[in-house]
Image 1 (cartoon, rainbow, N blue to C red):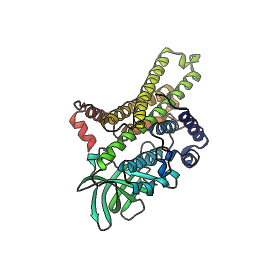
Image 2: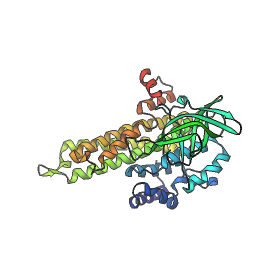
Image 3: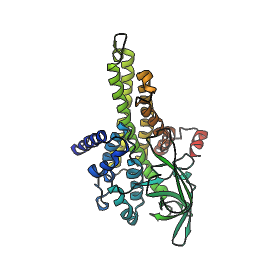
Image 4: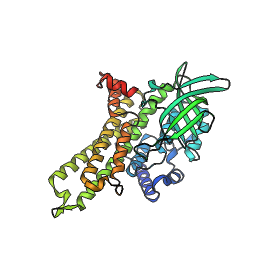
Length: 369
């Protein structure tokens, strides 16, 4: 699996831009100068018509900088949900605005701490001229600022997807305070909110399962980028921090720990790339679930381990506000839970392979609730 010259140029452009525009200020130039919001959107809707590998490249670079821009929530989750739903009318109405950066959208999906489509309990009732939605959504990425919220809700036909104006009546959005403050999340309360059906009624479960695979694939890339940056920072610190008259990186015990961290990063990178290249080739269904679940599980655990080593090998400065080590540790733990914890994805992997569920039922049920 090799990146093309164009993909490497994309990586360079994104990395340089993020260095010039720290924090949330990077979003506008990322969209206007590089066009990141439309990379995986077909040309007919104003996008570049690229795929999951280009998304992987962008997510790796965003992960390195712990960038708070709404790329994952809007350009990946919301945009791919619209495309997977197959509604040409809604795609034409919403995607051009997302691609241009004039607006962002959010996918309101999780309930009760679960991203399993079967856990959706929000109700959608048909009314004259549309649908009325009632329920509570949690962990909505960038939901407090999105112009449109795509809501998963149940009708008589099953889980379906609806487009809801975020400033409409019956919609209350509150930003939450997550452990990782660089990942904006919101709680969305719907009380008879008006929504438009996106795609076919009852098809939302299929859409969400596919979007979950793409979300895990993209998040795995971000985790790899962040873990690799942790390793870079730690290797540099080990070369300059002197104890007992020599750099700490010259001690055999430290070398072993850095070597182990390197193996974790590269193993995670292989898993993430496997899922990204498969998605780019049009792989769907159980095969993509197998690769995406593997990537999410492996990369979540690798990032958490490497971020922990970053704290340990930096010593006291690693737990101060003056150093970024604590920020990477918070992102590692937050991203490990996002879209479901590693053990839940191992259950998904077992299902995709036709194997017995490796997770005990009480643990699995507590995650679903």
